[in-house]
Image 1 (cartoon, rainbow, N blue to C red):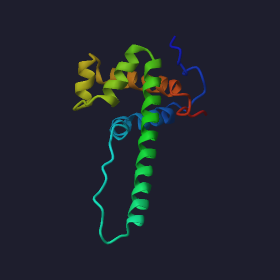
Image 2: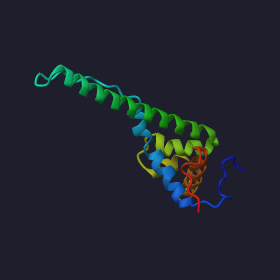
Image 3: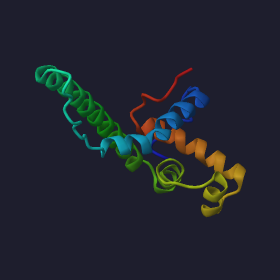
Length: 140
């Protein structure tokens, strides 16, 4: 039995799977944000330097906060993925972290039938939800 086998508990599996899927769908975007850099705009002559500097500092602060939040979330996702077994980790990374053209290409690559793939994906998402810290798990 997997360390994160929550099937024995009274959970709302469909909502838990949806929560895990929604989080993992954001993985690529969050990774891009966490690696992004800020470039300063050229100064505008119509505004005073003090206003421009203040506006620019607010933009930089907003950017830094967004980048730090993205880094923290990517780190948390990576940690949760590292906690689950290799087969489920591989499946979730291929589905949400790597770029595949289609689900067909993915389940063919994994030597699974379409039905087998989606059954295994649902189980992997449930395991991931628990590994993430339970905040994705919805109880009945």
